[in-house]
Amino acid sequence: MKKTTFFVAATCGLLSLSPAIAQNTVFTDNFGSSTLNGTSTPGGTPASSSTSYDIASSKADTTYPTIGPGALSLGLNAATTSGFYEAQAVFSGSPITLQTINDYIDLTYTFTDTGGLLAGGTSSYLFSGLYDNAGAVPVAGLLNNSGLNTTAGSIYATGNAQLWSGYVGRLAASGGTTEIYTRPVQNGIGTTSANQDLIGNGFGGGTYTNLTGSLGTGSPNTSSSTAVLQAGNQYTMDLHITLTGANQLMVIQDLYSGATIGGTWVGGVTNNFASVTDTSFGGLAIGARTSGVSTNAQMTVNQITITDSLQPVPEPATMALAGIGAGLALLARFRRR
Image (cartoon, rainbow, N blue to C red; front, side, top):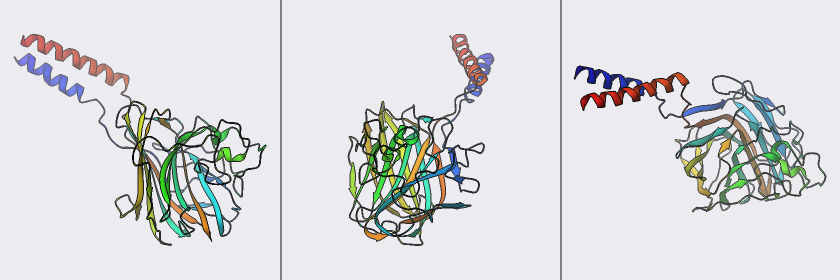
C-alpha cells in the first residue's frame, strides 16, 4: 500500500509540470524605441517591444506622423471632406496560430483624440486589424502623402501588404454602420497602389477592392453606431479574435473611454466567420477616416499591446517526465489489483 501511495504522488507531481493556460503578452509598445517608415521588424525580449510603423494614406500627410515615448501621432496635413490613413506593422517574427478551441489573440491600443476623430460625418471611421502577413513587410514609408490611390500601373501593386489577409474592425461615427469584415489577399487584376491598403474594403479611392472583404456568416454582422468622441479625451480600442470551432472564428471589436478596456463602453460589434483560412497572425493595422464634413482626424496612440492565450509547447524533458508519470500511474493501478 505504501508503494502504491508513492507512485500516485510521484505521478501527480510529474503531471503538474504541464503548462497552464494563461494570457501571454506577445507585443507591447509605448514607442520609446520604435521607428517610422522603415523595415517593419519586431525587436525586444522576452516580448517584442518595438517595430517600425509604415504609414499609408490617401491624402497629403506631410505634418504627420511623428513618434516618441508614449506618442505615435497620426493625422493628415490639412482638413478634408474625404481622406484616411493607416499605420501598418509586423508585431511578431513568427506567426501566432490559433489551433485549439477558445484560443484567442487580442489587439489593444490606447489613444488620445487629438482632434476631429469621428467628427466628419456618418462615414467617418476608426479601424483596427489583425493579419497573416505571409512573411511580408509593409512598403517602407513610400505610401505616406497620398500614396494610396487609383492610378493604374503602380509599382506597389504587388508584394508587401498586398499579400496580407485577415480581419478588420470598423467603428463608425454616430449614425454610421459599425462592422467587421475580412481583408483578403489582393490577388485579382488590379494594378493600383490600393492593393497595399489593409483597412478600407472599397469605401472610396485608395481602398482595397481586389478582392473585397466579406461580413461573415454570424449575427450580428453590423450595428448602428452611437459613438461620439471628445477631443482631448483618451480611449481604448480592443479587437479580439477567438477560435470557436473547426475553421470558425468570432471577432469582437469594442471601444472604451479611458486608458483600459474597463472604462465606459462607447461602441462595438461582434461578427462570426465560418470556413476561415486565416488563423495565423503576425501583422497589425490601425487608422482613421474622415468623410462628409471637412476636418482633420488626428490621434495620438499611447500604447499598443498584443496578447494571446496559446499554451507554450512543452520542452522535450517535460514531455519525457510526463510519459514516466503516466507509466507510474499504470503501475500503481496494477499493484492495487
